[in-house]
Image (cartoon, rainbow, N blue to C red; front, side):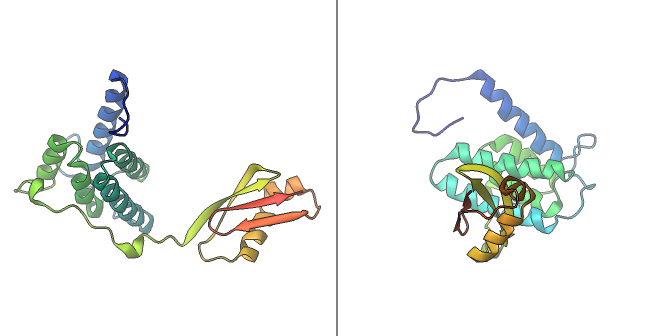
Length: 198
């Protein structure tokens, strides 16, 4: 529910959110009518595989640092993506269940068994992230005009300052705010933000 080193009162309402999360994971991995592994889900696309490996890397680091709340947040983000694409593809199901195991061991063990494994998941290693998939090829940058974020632009991760500036100035919302006038100053921090002074 929060960092281990932070003191906070127990909230019954927080339990409901975690229960709903586990239900959504279950529905993404297991067919509710048959109780078996879902077979109606398409193979994982590139975006799903990349998000899976980013999640594996993040959850591993969070678990090592005992930040269980942020590990759960990353699993929720992955599960929300799986829900949007219609369920958990076969090539992501086992990794998802293995990441869930330290946090919800009984539910994960049940799902592991239904995925067709005879032995306990406690004997399995934690998934390893493919480092080649962790690097992103596109980044989204906020564009500020006079100190307020007015738009966001998506550019190549390797784009130089000139390309980022051109993308920001051609963004329709920014062009509308500039109203044909050239900005007095454009500050580009690659990978971070663009700041425009009118």
